[in-house]
Image (cartoon, rainbow, N blue to C red; front, side, top):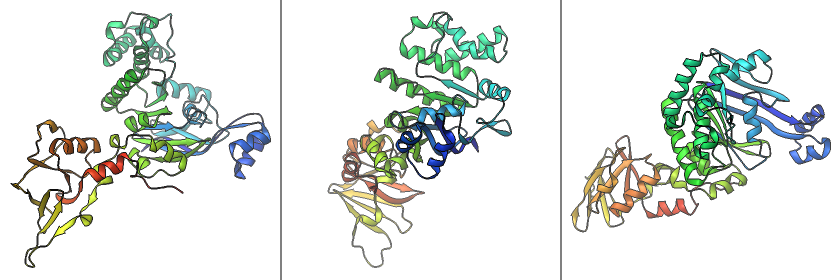
Length: 400
């Protein structure tokens, strides 16, 4: 069920909106409209549904419209046309046309925001900064400080509760911003490039912490970024923007495998696909393997791999694996498996949707192909060819 639903949304900055909208309907682009009317098109015909518990990353280059679109969700930017619907209990509120009273209610109880610049009040303690939004909700001082302290404990800053923001590092201040947003206990959390000003190591750490917090809290998060690696790491859905338009939206793996435009393809070409892709996206399927001749009455099949022969029965189930030295141990990979315990005596059978990074680690430890199965049936392998194919950027479909 959608928590945020954006429908045919246009955002225009300028004094000639009626004329600008007509030009947009004629198919004019942002540059042509700027020259004709002097107006800047911030968002053009955006359509996007974000479901409960999703982290949707809006990404693109500077000026692509991602922050502009984000700020419509909490009413900081007004729309020239279209709808931005946000769930409020059993109803959907249109943030583009609701009353001031409804807008205040939505900002206080349904939508909160984490800014790039932390936006902490320097005269307040860390605890009071986290509790500030709760005060706006009308919560008593004792209750809001108790809840604020719980949020600080969640982000590991309880010992800094009575310090001032300028006594904290940049990463710590961003954690305070996260704690303040989570303390509001809103359904939707907006994050406008919250980690971009931080050092790479701190940035990566906070990304990891956000992922862990999301597992506990299951918020609906809209996250703005210009970094595709960051988007692929934290996003369950990605919407890529170019010149005020959403040019592609999908799950991370499909963005990497099938970039819709040359613009998206350029982003994808500079990412590490092993962080995103699954085994069945890159595997050599069973139909492409070399099959060893069998006796006519034998219903099983044998396949010849690099220094390895595997036997598959008539139901598609793996039966055995042999090399020049005899039978090889077939080891089943499950989540949490200690890959370091593997040796060159093992050949690993793994789920077809195994993360490629895990598959590379298995290949490194065993020096053998990784065998993939789905629903108990052998479906293909991952070998050096497949790994190199990914790392060389040959894994995605070419765009026109």
